[in-house]
Length: 379
Image 1 (cartoon, rainbow, N blue to C red):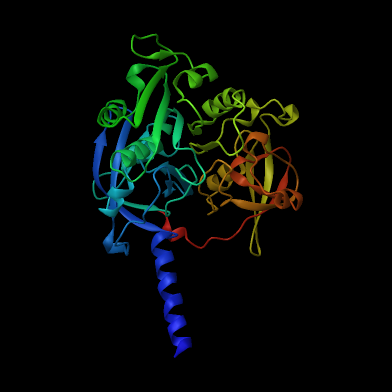
Image 2: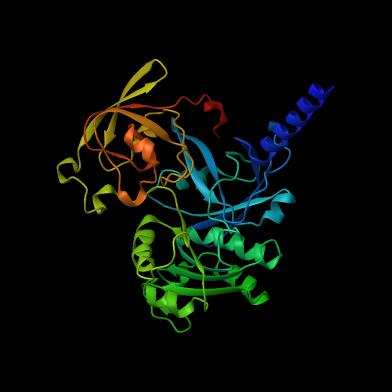
């Protein structure tokens, strides 16, 4: 009897864990909201016909990784859930993205996603969320571009009482017309003294806006008195600049958290990149189980992009070197990993493991990639 009871408890917790942390969620588009010509929000609901009946709950600031099958390539892209956790309980996620005209994914989405379109995603992931035991109750958020979306979710969660914290957002944009979700976010700030929005324009000097970049001086100007945590979200160029400014504040360890918007900048932007490898193409031999495949790998693109271009179903989630979902073993050859994005454990570095999303070929190489039999789980 006791054995049966324990088995029932284990089964109950297994199903609970699966519901909270599903590997795959099948969704469909309920509504599309246009934010000018180059930005859209997609309202996603469970696709019950494909087996997803409830959305996984998440912490404000987390993301889902979308899985797409585009012209023979299996690709993933992480997008922060900009709606609140309360909305997830009601059966909705909202993701907001900007069009990158020269990109690979957003032009496909703009052309092919309509109301009713099926979308395949991971469960919620990421560490850019407020944890009272870990973080200070005052948060200074540094955002750039579509990196505003996780902080939009946090602001909404503060307004509805899910989060008990104070949030000051320093949001960098090129021009005032380029601000994403600015009016919507200001409406939240107008309803609670716990949320404050400061817009910073790099290319315009306009009354009512700060001008320039997010510097240590601006952080000091708007940071609350006493201790605070800094959260950073945005493209890698913005992150690299912001971290140099934040480092000058000499904050205590653990006070800075960050999440990048997917792929990092070109490896050529880093001072320690080996110049001899620039603009070259290398031979990449990929081992998956007992199968060997030889493909081309360009020096200016990550190993993950090379795998995706070749139609190989390679694991990935955050695409910024943090989550280690794309962890693979370098059997031979050399790869360049920018120190700023090398978040591997010491043991992984010692035994030749790397994260393909932030590793760039600088010689011919051989890579052992974990097999994922979920090609049918791509939209």
